[in-house]
Image (tube, rainbow, N blue to C red):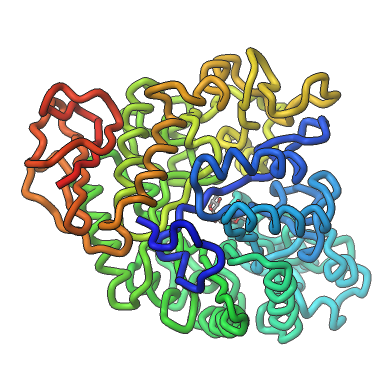
Length: 546
Ligand code: TEU
C-alpha cells in the first residue's frame, strides 16, 4: 500500500498519508546500558528489528532532559536528551541510522507545559510576583481572605485542582501534574521558542513532530470559573480558536524545508467538525484517530466510526489515521478480552481488573490489526502491540509511577500497565530488555508469562502475533491497490465488516458469534486465524485477492 516502496526516504511524496508509524516509548523499549531504563543505545541496537518489522517511521515519545514526573512529558529542555537515555549526538546518530534503513523519524513536542525544573520556571519562581518571567506562565493570586484558595475552580486532567501555590503566596496553573506548569501562549516569547525548537529538530533531520495535547494550549485569559458538566463555548482551555493561529505558524516552519515535514496532532475532541479544523491545508497534516482507538469491538460501532472518520477527513483532504493503542491507554489484548471492549480515560479506573479473556482478546487484536492496516490512511502501532502484550494490571501500588495513580488516590490506576518494558528474549525478567548481568531491574516488573511472548519466541513462529504484523506490513507495501484507494463496503451481515480497497484487495472481519462465508475471491492473502474452508470464523479477519 506504500507507493514509495524501495525509495521511501529520498522522494518528496507525502509519506505521512499512508505510513505505518511505530511508537517507541524510550523508557520501555530496550535498555542498552543495563540500568533497567530503556535508552537510545537500546533503540539503536533494535533498529534492525523495526526494519524487519517493516515500519515506515518511528515516533519517539519524549527523550528530553526531564525529572520524569510524567514520564518525560515534563520537559526541562527540548533541545537535548535526558542523560538516562543518552546524548544528543546519539539521537542524531539514531536519526541517521533510521534513515539509512529507510525509516523516518518523528519527535514528540510538548507545547502546553514544561517541567517545573525548566530554566524558565525556575527563573519565574525566583523572580517573584509581577515579574516578566512569570508572564511566560499563568501565575495568579489566590482567592479568599489570604489568597489561600486557588484562583479558579479548574481541575487537573490528572485529578485534583489545576493550581499549586508557591511559598510566596502566588498560584500557578497546571492542567496536568503540578510538575508541569502551563505555558502562556499569549506571550510571543513562548511562540518564538517553540518555532525555534521545531527548527532545531528539523535541522537534525527529523521528518515530523507529534504535538502533545494540541488543543489545550490556549487559555481564556480571564481564567473564569466554569461548570465542567456544562462548559461554556468557547471552552476556557479546550480547542479555543486561538490555537489555529499557533499551528498555522508551525506549518509555515514545517513547509520551509525542501523535504516537507509532517505535523501530527494529539487532538482528542468529540466534535468531528472541530477536529477537522486542525487538518486544514495550512495547519496539521494528520491527527490521531481516538474515536477508533476507543471504539468497542462491535461491527456496527466500528463501521460507523470508519465512515465518520472518512467523512470528516475528506473535505480537508487529510489522510485518516488508525490507532489501536498508545502509551496512555489499556492494551488492546486486555480491552478486547473484556465484556466491555470500549476504552475511555474516564472509565479506566472502573474497568481496571475486570475479568479479561486474554485468548479471546488476542484473537480480536489480531483481527483488529488486519482491519486497521487495510483501511485508507496511516496507521500507528504502539510498541509491544506487535508482540500481543496484555495490560499489566497487577503492578504493586508502591511501584506505580504514573501521577494519575497518586492524584486520584488510586481510583484510576493510571497508565503504567501499558508501559512495562518489552520482552525480547530469554526465560525470565528482564527478558533481554537489559543486557545479561545488568545491575538494574526493569523499572516496572515484567510478568513471568511473557516468556511465551518474547520477540525471540515469536520470531519465525507460524501463527505468532509478530509474524502476523510482519506479513501484514510486507503485503501492505506490495499491494498496489490500497495506497490511497477508496474504501467500498461490500454487502454483508450486520456483524461482518467487508470492504474493498482498489480493484484487487478486500478485507473481511467477522465480529459475529459464528462463522461467515467469504465473499467471492481469487485467493487468501493473509488471515488473522485459521479458516475453515470458505468459512471465516468468529473474531477473525482476512485479506482476499479479488
Ligand atoms: O496526553 C494528553 C491527554 O490528555 C491524555 O491522553 C491523557 O493521557 C489522559 O487524559 C489521562 O487520563 C498527553 C500524553 O500523551 C500523555 O502521556 C501526557 O501525560 C499528557 O499529554 C501531558 O503531557
